[in-house]
Amino acid sequence: MGTDQAAPARLSRRTVVCGGLAWFAVQGRVWESLVAQSGSTVGAACADSPEPTVEFDARPGVPVIFGAEEYRELKDPSVTFDGSRWHLYGTGWMNDSSAAVVFHATSQSPSGPYRMRRPVVLEGALGRGVAAPGVLVDEGVLHLFIQTEFQELGGTIEHFVSNDGDTFEPAGTALFADPRLGEACIYDAQPAGVDGRRYLAYASAERVGQTQLHLARAADWSGPWERLGPIVERSDVVFQTQAGCLGYEWGLEGPQLVELPSGQVMLIGVCFLPGRDSGRRQRVFVATAPSVTGPYEVLGTPFDPALDTWAAGENGHATAVVAGDHVVVIYQRRQGAGQPWWLGTSTIPLHALAR
Image (tube, rainbow, N blue to C red; front, side, top):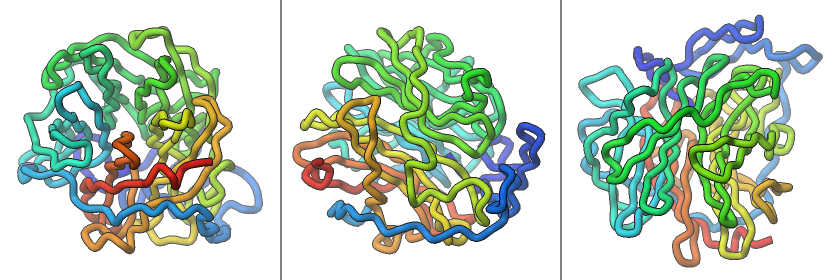
């Protein structure tokens, strides 16, 4: 969940010392001189990413949210339906404040337009990286999960509940970072209901910035959560820059699971392409699997920034729902390094995901 903000909200990238290794942040979350692992590839230029082999037929993205004049930046979207209207949550920065907030907008359609409501207050969510809410409605109750750190070791995923979507009450800690399980960093948690069971997909790693996509499940949203380990690793995504390569920026993050009408499961995540300049590396990618635990087939990157004149640099953190014969995707996008993130929407035909 990257950003170029240099605000006290602590959502910007700065110098991070992790596991005895110094990470120097340049332009937000970009490390051009990364010492992440030993080996001959450190500092070497790695091959460009291969072209995706799947034709997604995705439409060019368009802005999705209106009435947001009080905000200078929006990112990390999460969408859910309460039976009468759609709710969109995410991380935002208002014009008159340097602190990040959890924004809330609603619409009668999953693709928008969404209209802003007042920001959500989450009492008890403490940390220097509180952001990236993941929200889901189950039996009339909105369940919100949010990280407390992302650029440092440690942190938790906190659980909140609401009956109206505006006021949330704390419901306990869902997950703690646990180095013994290889999850010393933990963030970007998104809830999903698949085949009648409850899951959390999240980014986690032993070292900051080398994240992979993990899964946990529980019988109830209040837990306890059984960790199932990684479901998509960096090596599974052939167009992800590997740690140690010149220009390595970050690992995989921002996972969300969507149950498809075919019975398959779609995973949307974020990767970082090699051979690109800062501000042009981040991409939404799509994978599918026969079940929620995998194995996942990584299909490619559906959204080409060059097609979107309003944000032609890079795209990232996404949320998705099935609507008719399409998947509606809301994702963050920006013009390039140092530019603010904003939200757009596109669609992917279901037939493009069939396997």
